[in-house]
Image 1 (cartoon, rainbow, N blue to C red):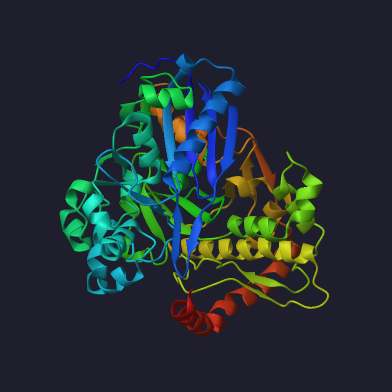
Image 2 (cartoon, rainbow, N blue to C red):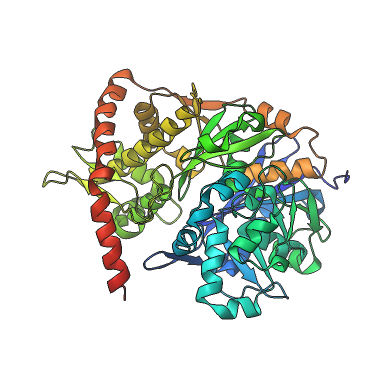
Length: 517
């Protein structure tokens, strides 16, 4: 075990819309935080890309900011952990520089690569626990190697989003077990790369880094990275983890059946699941990845765009809220307050939140958003509330799927940026019929990343015990029985919409592909 040099740990989450960083003390309390947004580029009809340099630059600035705000010396930091959006992949050359923009988890250009391998669906599921789908990393890489042959000639390695930032910090290439589990290249039981699957997807074996446990120290901050981040050269950096797993640690998921939802760009419904109870052929629409709590996997249902829809509304139609919030104000809080002025059901509006296709439970890349029920009486507040309600209906749909696996939570824990919305939390409670609990000081995935770093360097002895004891103070939002009954009727309409629009979605997907500029 490495003896920690300090009594604080830095956690960073490299998200889809931006970086968030926190500094935790030895008691697991957040001492300081920082955040910075960056853009993504959407390539019609199915592409989504990002500049990895944006990840690194935002990370460096946010780490500098938390050190300054907490007024701690670099020597007081004992370790660094990085979580990230997943699976987002970047191909690097021998020097570790990206050869092209990263492919985000949203990118679905690997659809044909999956269709071409449909005959091995059972083998992929049996080995990885996951379905054959373009959401995962291997189909993205297979598409990239076929579409851009130069990448195969100049590339020398592939990294996940957090792995890229770890490599910028340490000069070491690595991949944690959780991210490896989202590639369709790794064995769920052993955590190691499967040679059969690597060959199946045509990925150069030399590209794949060593798979490590999230708490394993994989390297130390270099002198160059120290100058960029303000950290001390030589500070240990652990392998890190997937953002959903990190957020689940903050939410206190440590035993079978614990459930939380994490809302940022997307919403992910996570459940701690004892590995010995997992039956891969029964997962259905759910996905699975290794979890840092020993003996457990994380079973999850993942939507694509939830908080991202609210961000889209903010950017395209939120001028009024931006003016009210001012330069330093929280526009999302203003939108949440606006939604609270609209009635339950948004005056008859129902939104399908499939703005970028959908993962669980429908797994349809052709699906798109729909706002049904508009009339001349509809107001801006109704539309914003419909966004919050529609994403809550999607949450309820995923909870139904967990119920199929025998998981029936008595409470729903909520973390991530979406957990800050008072109106949104009440809607989630009323739609699902479950009490919604949020940590008193919810920060999401970067907290889990810092906890993993603290465990990796010995600042904390027992990760699960620390996660459990952090859950002392929570905000609790109770469902209202009458509102839940009303929402059940709207939810029935919501469930009917996607089947009714499926042929329309397929037709529009064909048009987009044929007529894309």
